[in-house]
Amino acid sequence: MTDAPAARLEVVLRTGGVRAALVHLNGLSGHRFTALYRFAGSHARNLYFYDRENPGVDRGDDYPVEVTYCVYVRESGRPFLIEDAPADERVMGHGSQHAVRAYCGVPLYDRNGTVVGTLCHFDTQPVAVPPGTAEVMGHLSRLLQTTATGPA
Image (cartoon, rainbow, N blue to C red; front, side, top):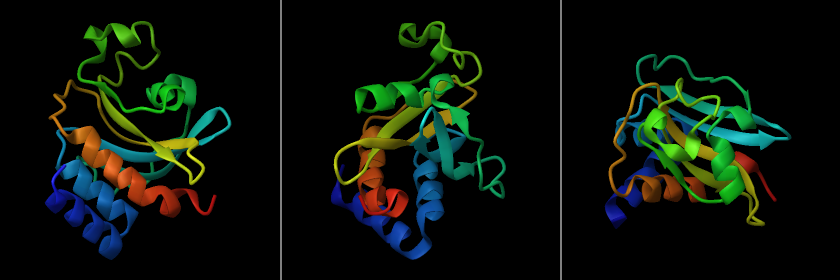
């Protein structure tokens, strides 16, 4: 990632807050939704949400982690990308395979390096993920460590 996108993202976060940063990040992707989830036991709790088609909706649903693709990020501690779930063998049989067809998620860590949530884009339609997307998302995830998770 070049310094310009990182610097712009930092300015948006500093001046507009977390949701503004999600809106900005969503504008860099082809995905309809961008969200920040925190793991709470067996659930992914929505902290921030943006829907490109319904920008006034600022809260998403909470889900059992196992029915989301966030489970793959939580288990691996690494980004997880799906461009078209029904064609992706890694998610064959997953409960969301036909409902959420595209996903790009990165881990959100606390200060101790524990995965505590995800920052993710997702869509009900297939979406090609441009190179560098996970890196930009990872940068925002690092910026959000204290904001989203509080002191470790």
